[in-house]
Length: 545
Ligand code: GLC
Image (cartoon, rainbow, N blue to C red; front, side, top):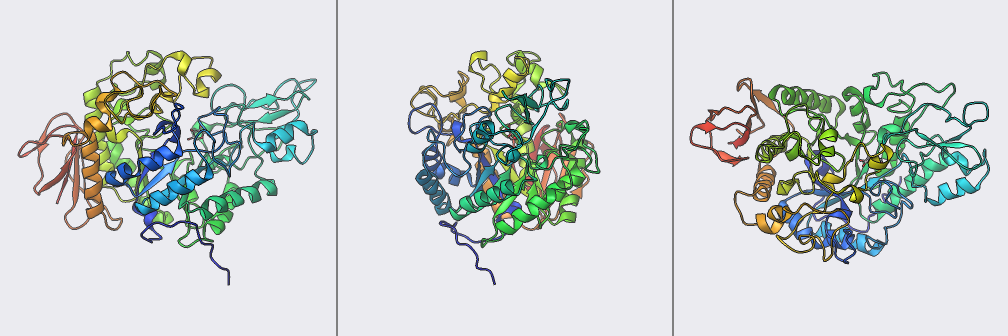
């Protein structure tokens, strides 16, 4: 009989299924709280804000990468998977952060980035110094080029950030990178790569980490046979036949991860970032694999009742089939904040809008926030886990006018300055109404904040019953009291209304239209905005019991 491994720290309560219906708060560590005055957030900053997270009522925090990184892609270019970026702290600091989270009964999820390393990872340096065909190169995808003297890339595959997915090294070979050139792809058919990542999972699990978010989970298995076939990430086939994404072989990797995650009691949780068609996305979430996969359907949908109903129906059915629970995401570190998306005319190309510094088309901030609060309250009533991205609980809008010379996203450079990228949702959090970085730290932050950020700070909103922060606290607390099981029953409510019952009379009713509708009977326990007697205003959600 095998013995279970014992983590260094455990949460106060022990529920092996904690992840099934959790509220998970995403921390982007470099932009959360800066305690050492270098303009970058750090782990001690996260620890210092644990009481805030506890009052917010979240069940878990997910930390975007805090590992050593040259920051070619906001830390998703990892130079050492089993260490802490010295600018963010030390291993002692992460241990202290995990302990503090657990004392507050908050679970900790860390990001693992298996598709690619940083070009400053020891393996890649070794690969560059080694000869073509060497074992050091075989951890990555090095190939000879095409054309008479190999001066053309091996294939026409393009990187997610623009430009070719191949970069040439001085001896003439090319290496594959689905993202920036500073993010060389690993070759997951190499057993050494697989063994090393399993060690990484154990390394963090032993320290007390409760779960993992798996970056680009759908990218690890690739068909690199020649002639190379075209890939289309944006319209993946349903039979797993794309050469680069969502291939069937990827599942064997996660099955073997599951045996590692199950070496712990309770088993470590995991959630796949797998941009695969919905019916195939749930495969990553099978109990024999990661357990959950992000559902980005709402994040990509308009504020529209029929779209919401279709997405909820599909995802709850798929969750039931796969034995997973659903996940719900409205914002994260990769997309324009939902309070902003919902305040722009439907169909706005947000990349183009950002290029106008957020001036055209005109953003209706009040409407965006009203709709964002309504959507958030709806999502919090759904069965499954809700992922909340730092700052959305303050009602933050996208920072659309970051000066060009301050932009950090590799998309900005790789697209020849035609796409600004994702920095606008990664601007540091305002904690106070004034100060050099509104309480984020003692010096100007690594990404400049909008001048009006103080009005959206924790200090400004704390204690104001109408603030978005008070609303999130109230909604999450009510969810904690009400949430049970994973059943949902639709209620007929009209074309613009999304209404469903959970259990014991708990109902969520959202009016996605602009005209008020009659308020259904019952006691209102939480409302996303002001409600008048007898009426449910437009763009508003209420929970009734
Ligand atoms: C994921 C991350 C994103 C990153 C990319 C490459 O999509 O969420 O931020 O740029 O992977 O690692």
